[in-house]
Image (tube, rainbow, N blue to C red; front, side, top):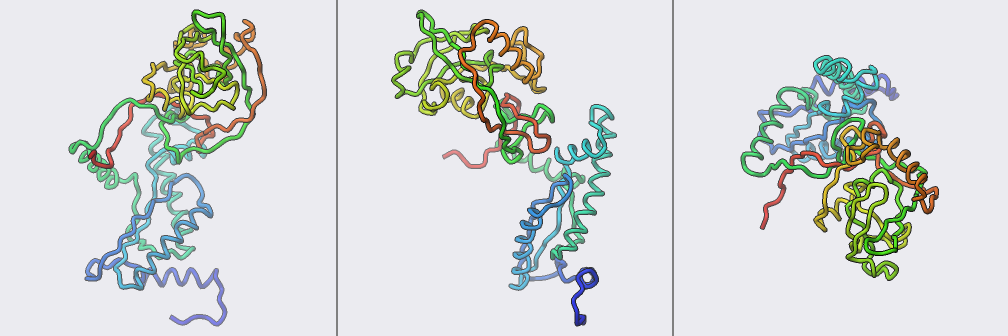
Length: 364
């Protein structure tokens, strides 16, 4: 193949791509006796347009593929597409303005399959234009029958051999998408909120302990109050009982080094669950479990007359009642960083749901 004197990318690169495909430059040779080097590409998620991050990461993979070929390896380098999951569903909802609840499961699945086909072609055009040395004879999709059966078989083998266990445990939950999430699915959102200080009465005493919180809607799920073991301001209260305002339950006052004496008033309520620290304390101190928020992001029956309200509305109504009963000692604007689902920007909750756990290492 001869090269032109002047390089014209818009003309020369498509010709090069066509030549590579026709000549099998990057084909995997099944009959070859050379050692195989297989690349299991993390399949690109079908969630919209590719961005520079994709180009950056897939270029790294391509460098390795080319290096291994030059060193005599028979490189198996396919391209995959991850279209079996929440990102594709969200893309359908945004692009077509529909949900599975509105159009029905089967119709929604057909829309997912249709958009996956369209986006896959767009992705492939970008990868080819970039010049990735992929063997385009072997594309795969996570939603196809082979991929799903392979994943199901692998899971069944794990279960059969005792490596998979199903149990209820705290999970990061998106009330909008109604699904559990991984840390990788979250973004940070900086916002202004209000920190309110409310009094917890100490049982068998005329004293009260002021507690600052930005989430008064979790008061019905309060199961303990924590102070730092070295905080001399509150050391005399360790081991006593406190009464939660408005909802009336009594909870123990415990000590733990995770408490930040400089934050707020220096004492903190533990609710199941407001954040990861609450989960740690719940497990470590074998605390009661009270679920105040359901999978739809609404307050449960433990919130009494506030049950059924969305979290934000419940927060405002409970705060209004506390204020009306003169139970708000102090209120202050406060900067806050919360975790939100990257797909819909909905603040996540920590709730108890059934999950599968895979044992990755053997117990010694």
